[in-house]
Structure formats: C-alpha cells, structure tokens
Length: 299
Image 1: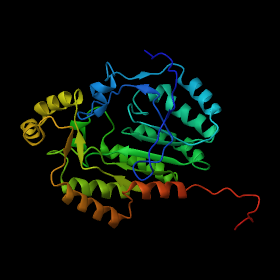
Image 2: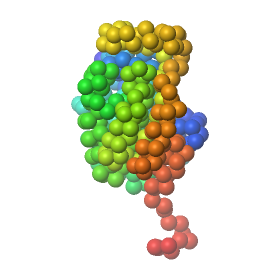
Image 3: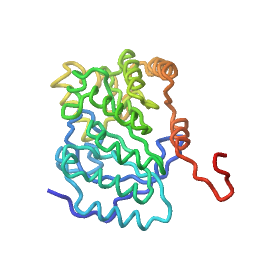
Image 4: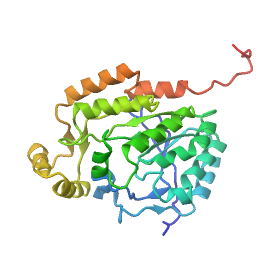
C-alpha cells in the first residue's frame, strides 16, 4: 500500500552548523518503520503516525522530488532518516532512496542520511559520484557494540557488525561518514566499556566522527512501548526508570560526565571528531574547490 502523493517532499531546515549536521532540507520518501527498536521516539503520539510499524512508500515521490529540485534556485544538502529509515526493507526492491540520490546528484545537490541498515552500502557508487561536486555525509546508528544486545533492543535491523561493515565499504569508496551513537539507554547501554568499544569499532570502520548525547528521551507513545519492552526483556529495569525519572522527557545516562570524558578521550586517541562544528567543517572542506576564471591551474 502506498500513501497519497504528498504536496511537498523537501522541508526547509534552519539549524546552525554548530548545533547539528549541515543540512538545508529534510526529506522522507517513506512513512513508518519496521525496525522495531524499543526506544524509537518516532512512535510518539505527537507525530500522529498510525500503524507505525508498517512501512509505506509515498506515491509519486520521485516525480515530485525532480520537480522540486528543478525549481530550486540554489543547491544544498538534503537529509534523510529523521522519521523513517531510508533503507527500510522495502527499499531493496523499490529503490526509492537510490532513485532519489541519483536525481539529487544529477541536479548537483548533496546528501546526508542516518540509517541502521547495511543496505546503504549498495549505493556507494551513486554517493561517490555525488561527492565529486556536493557534500555527502552518511551516518549509521550504533547504540551497542555487542550484536546480541543489539538484537534485543533493535530486533529487526542489521546488527552492529553488519552496519560497521557497511560503513567500511562506504568509507573505502571515499565517502565521508560516521556514527550516530544515540540514544544511550540508562541502565542498559550506558557503560563505559560499551562507549569506548563503539568508538574503537567506528575508527576501524573508517568513520570520521562519532556523535553522542549520553541519554534518551521518552514521551507519550514511545514511553509506553519502551516500558513494555523493558518489562518483557529487561526484568527490573522499568522500575529503575520510574524511580530515577518518573515521567520525565529527558532521561540522562548514569554518570554522564564520566562517560563523556571516556568518550572524548577515545575519540581523541583514534583521531575522530565529535563536535558538530568540527564535523561540518571537515565535511565542507572535503569538497573539491572549483577554479574561477582568475585561478591558475595547479594554484
């Protein structure tokens, strides 16, 4: 089943490069997500997504995207993955994301996305061509270093080892990318050894950066789903949440300052960036500079 053709795909973004990843527009080609991650904020009732676990493609999305790209007076970076993973299981056959990336490259737009699927490595060829003339930034979410724990909290998605292998394929193709180490789940993944191990594995996979916020958020809709999962799979942890956070929106990791110090030290040791301003500066600096009429070749 497809959704009706949307009126607009590209949603303008106004955010400082010091506060988040460099982007000009957000885009979702699909609605919903089948990954089953127990902590997913997109389940929150405020987003109004019914039947969230069923992925639905947006009808006519590619034709609409081309119309919007053609109408833009300036190019920029289009980000995907905020509400629906661009590499969900339907993408393997429908290839909406691949078609969109190809179009974006044709019109000389850049791309940025977040995914938990190893399928993203399929499009290394398209991304490599895009990166010749526009910023390209690929992010893979990794919340735990251990595949067994990953399958408990993110049951229907590529395990951590496969995501890191996909990042390796992309970075080997010369594509700028890194790791989104979020959320950090209190009493489950907020361990120093987990954080350090993810940083090391990220470096081994060719990541340029790792970003971490050391906590999670819970609100109506995703809170109930999360607590049910805790009750089922992590005995006693739900009670610890209620005692520590009640119905709070922000749920910080245990000893976040200690975790941050360990994280920063590990990033520095492996030569990884972790602040948005530095990540964005490196991304934009990686773009080839076009010669002006007044430049001498080789200057």
